Length: 161
Image (cartoon, rainbow, N blue to C red; front, side):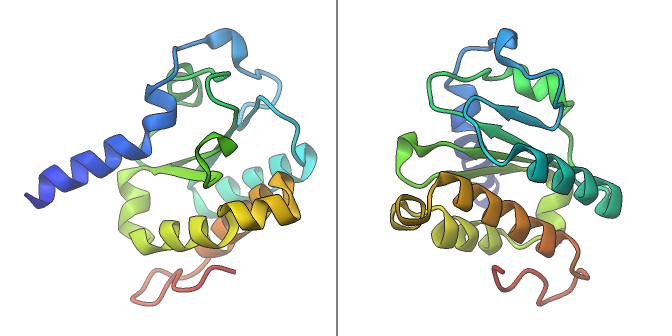
């Protein structure tokens, strides 16, 4: 039963990518860690994402989209998503703007509750309508960065900064 629930949760967290048609033409080949279908804080995010990968070995990939305008599953192959990859899909279509799909190695180091708390704090409709989608995405990336830099232990990532 627990295995079935895990499979279901993983499937649901990939819903934004699976539901879309694969459209490689929508990939941004000049900024390989960031696929922006809308404009966000590109320069800062690209620098932070590169620093995360360099410092922690984890890959953070951001697919900012407005469903159905999405590259879909083409992003998975383009990014070579693996067990150490976090796919972050900010999409205001479904209310909570923050959606995550995390690899198995990430799942071992970061408690699942972190992703729920992160989405609840910065992804809720009240936050992003008040502060803006850019602020929501930037705050989430910075919180992920902070969490990935913590020592793995029983209390890592217990707070969303």
